[in-house]
Length: 331
Image 1 (cartoon, helix red, strand yellow):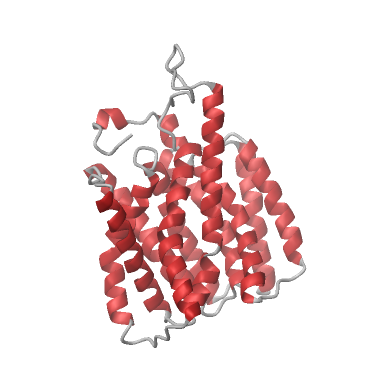
Image 2 (cartoon, rainbow, N blue to C red):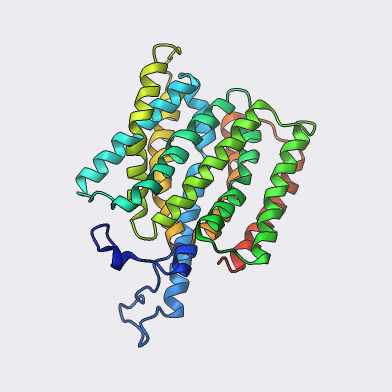
């Protein structure tokens, strides 16, 4: 499905809009079934591929907080946010020009604006500000509520609801990570927590709109146009912040900046949106319940942070929720 097809060709059924798929798919052998629908084997293959792409996105994002901490070794929070956005936009613009990607349809720009505001401006800035005073491990657990927020945004956007089993498992996973966070702060959220909760809300909206849009536009174009659309704001932030915040170009800072610009801001979204386009926003979002656990691992191995004994219990509950939500039918 290309962006040059007519609106009639790209129209979605309510079910397709809810699940993030474009309807029936051609069978793997290239032969359509008599009724024009995809075979069970093709659907299973699409689910497997979508799960793989979404999982790769989660793995990519799990390094984002450590990468941001490294970038903060040489950049201020506002400088880091602006520079990463400008670099990501440059990469995306080159990709769009080389592939001669067509401009999005007029009706797609509002959704792209949500992607730009949530994923290319709001989330990077708020999480970077939070990481000034919050540990990577703690921040990862707070952002662990992102899948639940994404599922809620998707349900509101599509006016359809996942099954009760799905909601129960997703809610349990979200409640687990929130409880874990509050117990570490004696039951009270910190300023950093408020930044993080704001970040997960705007990012959830970007995921929901971007995932739905990726059902009719290649996922990499969704995030590419999103970061390009956010480029003027990020350029303005960088131009203002760089003269006011000290910059120390250490190897760690440069490596961190390269990662959060090329992967966290662009490359990770390419596979993430492709996965959501294949298996739906709600179901793909639940794979992110594993992201805080992976980030905790990198925090220990790469940053030398210490984690408490509650981490293994949290991991067990969260992984169980992932299994349940993946088996439940996500409408």
